[in-house]
Structure formats: C-alpha cells, structure tokens
Image (cartoon, rainbow over all chains, first blue to last red; front, side, top):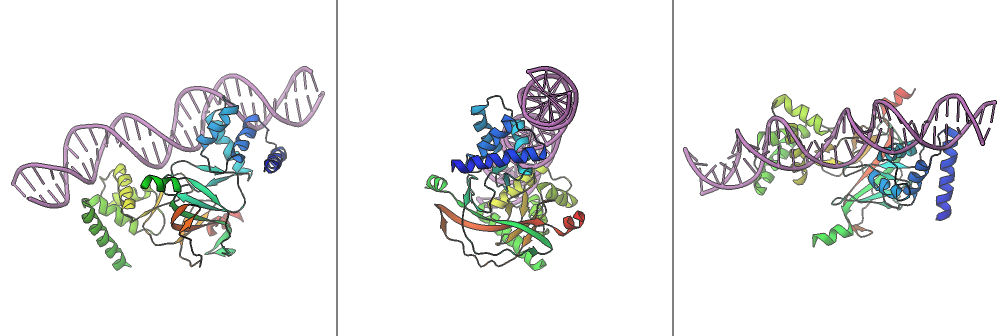
Length: 144
Length: 144
DNA sequence: TAAAGGTTGCAAACTGTTTTTATTTATAGT
DNA sequence: ACTATAAATAAAAACAGTTTGCAACCTTTA
C-alpha cells in the first residue's frame, strides 16, 4: 500500500516535469494528502490535512492545486451531491455509495456485469459510474 | 403527454392538501415550469421561465419551492457537475448522459438489467443512477 | 368575514470558489 | 554556486450561488 503511494507520487513528479510544471512542496503535499484518504474529501478537508504539515499554505492554493491535479489526470472531481466539491485520487473505474442524509460518499469496488456501449444517442462514451443513493450506517443510527 | 402533466399537477395539489401546505400560484407555477422541461434546469432557468407568467416572483421563492417539491418527492435534485444545482421533475428511475466538455446532462431511459441489492456495506439503499460520461454530438463537431 | 398561520418578497448575510496583485520560489543556463 | 526568468504562492478582495430574517401578504378554516 505504501509502495503504491510512492509509485503514484513518482509518476506525479514525472508528469510535472514532462509538462514543465514546477514541483512545489505545496503541490506534493496536496497530492499526498489526497492519496492518504480513502474517502472523498472536500477542498476544506484537504486544506486541514495539509496544514498539519505546512501551516502557512493558503486555501486558494489548494483550490488551484486540485484543479491542476485533475488536469494531469491524477485525481477526479466527484460528481457531488452536497454543497462543496469532493476530490478522489482513486482514478480507476469504480462506483459510489452516497448518503442522502449527510452527503458522505464511499468508493465501491464492484463488478456489475454491465457492458457500456461505445456510443449512446450520439454521445461518444468514455466511462461510467454507478451512483447508489441510500442512508449510511451512522445516519441510520440517528434515525432510531 | 398533456394528460400526464395534468395528472401530475393533480397529485401535487393532493399532496399539498394532505400535508397542510398552501397552494399558491408561485408553487404551482414553479412545478409546472419544471414539468414542461425535458432537460435539467438550474434554479435560475426555472426562475426565468416562471417570470414569463409571474414577473414579480422572487428568486428566493423559487429556491424555497424547489426544496419543498423535493421534500414532497415530486422533483429530484440531480447530482450535478457544474457550479449550480439542477432539478428534474422526471422522478422515475432513469440514468444520465453527461458531456465532459460542456456539462450538458441528458436523461437516458434504458434497461440495464442490473439488480440493486437492498443493502450494501451497511448502507440501506434507496435508488441508483448510472452516470455515463462522454462527449456530446455538438462537442464532437467542435473537435474536428 | 375574520382570525391564524403559512408563504412571499426584499435585502442582507453566508458559503464555496475564483481572481487579482505583489512577492517568493523552482528551474535552466551560465 | 549564481543569476535570470517564468511560474507558483499567500492574502485579500471579488464573485456567484444559495440561504435567512423579517415585515407584509395571502390561503385556508371556522
């Protein structure tokens, strides 16, 4: 797992060099913070994590950095339900379990057996994701 | 189709009465505006539509009304990609075709044959929606 | 028709995000 | 190492979308 994170950071460094982007501590810290989370943090969450190491980073930088990382194809902005955007460093195809009460989003590794056509109604398809809406365990507890 | 809209409005009136909500022209107009659109309008879009009939309605009322309609189960807030929330009066299960270039979202009536389990990883499931990402025909044209 | 309470319109407040500007820093070339 | 340069940063202000407080208004029920 640690190995995995390290190789991802390495490919991040390579991509930056290829494209002439500078490797700043802030960039690296933001990407690392994202890699170290299994959930889908908001920008504010990432900001909080990074500040533990770099207390002087600014929120605007985090916003800019996640956008850059998205352009690099290293993270994805998850189609979001609540009020703020959520990011995900898990970029291979997977699905989402979304709590309608609190907005929490969890990754779901699952085989659906569904085969996506290459073209639908004139759209050239690229990827798909199943969003399953429900109530998470902790919100279920609150109900009763 | 018109028949369908009328029956939906009727059930809206009934739901309001049941729950002690008042039937105001604004509420009815907002719901009608939503029923008359096949796409997924933003609140601003709905506001513009309703103002053709009721020029004095306020934007805040539209925001409040779509929220009420959602609580009534008559419309859904579509998991959104861009910056503003989008609503949909088509509440029976359907899927979405999303253009990664321009953000357009289209409904997709499609049988997937996938059967959703009642519970997944502790979540009590309620509904699901397949999001298919791709490039819409008009963005494909711009590419070439 | 009058009373009661939900609903509206307006404006102001809030929240998440983006942009502006001056300053700092990583990088490539000496 | 040192310097030039172009990019990235921090901080604050600007912005867009959304929500809220409050007084006036309008449905509803009796």
